[in-house]
Image (cartoon, rainbow, N blue to C red; front, side, top):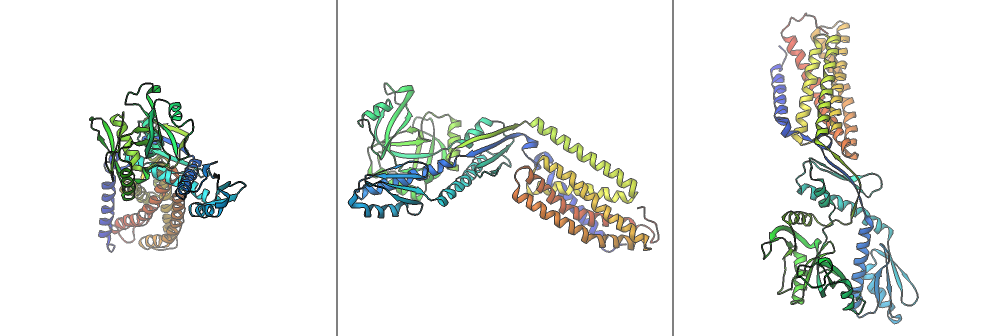
Length: 522
């Protein structure tokens, strides 16, 4: 009897048992991708100009506040998404202005001086390019957090195309497409600003209260009329608020659904340490004034500050329970850095996915059956070894996929069929080498041992090269390409085990029960 044959058989049985345990029952353990399970496929463009505009406007606000604090005249306004303009700087205080501007803007803007106290600041090209890249990266991370909280199994969120501003989102198993799109696209920008005046029933009334012109530090924001103010247009009120927010969504630590004092759905939020310090300072300085809670540039409520508030707050309004849940989700995941526009939308029905699975399984069975007939016809009884090793190869591959939580896609099924081809190729190499050794006059046992020993390095070499290709496909591919690369990777690993170890063990098991000079059916 061959040495260690018993342990080889036990090893094969253990590996087979672990593979079956990993994917059984398959309807629960094998994760299906969008093309097999159904769902929604979206391609969106990140409007990176929005991120540049926000940065420029915030820079203008910071500079305006600092100029006012230093008692220096001058009006700061953003001209384009990357340029801001300063007018009215007194000629005798140019040097002081330049010092302040350098402190506030020098890291990101180039300064140009004009006549009559006019200055323009243009965002540096490298800073603008980095902001665009960061906005896409942040959008991907934010969308990923949102779809993960939706409970979508194995979503795909990745950069798409070569433009550098597109995002691919695939949500397997999603049926409520409209809700998913709304949650993904919602900016959910939360700002808390001190109310300077109002509310007013119309924008014209708000402007009239300021004699037709707002100060540079003020803006008008619309809101919901839940107070029954006479004359409000369409149930809308208008508030004059400070342009600079006391705190924003960036200061949030958490958000969760709750109920307000009238037992209506609301959202409770808590702030991080820096946000709590800023909020405490602002509320202590403005007791008795209204605080506008603004979500996506719309006032949701404007309660009166009755005492100093630090780390807790609440957003109330005319919300349904589902709206509260969705708002909490989007606030927790963070605000998108820029708006999104949809470029492509495809919905894959579960029926189409079931048909794809059925077609893929039938193709795999047909391929395996044809291979089995060929191996039996050409290599006779030795072909049984090849059939067993290929079938076990597919079993182990499926176990690998289920154990690591890899997603099965339609290209992944193509990888299964390719695995059958790789198994055939490896067995043909081994069998032909065995036949050559027998033709050279060696005995059956020596020919089998020599055939496996000499072909092993060839099989290892080809599989390592293919593994490198699979790694590159996984690293640089997206979606379906990654699914194919995953199946190919695990198929290569399992094929080395089955073609070399399992097939050899089967030969040794068969030869151990026969006479040393018996012929080999090959």
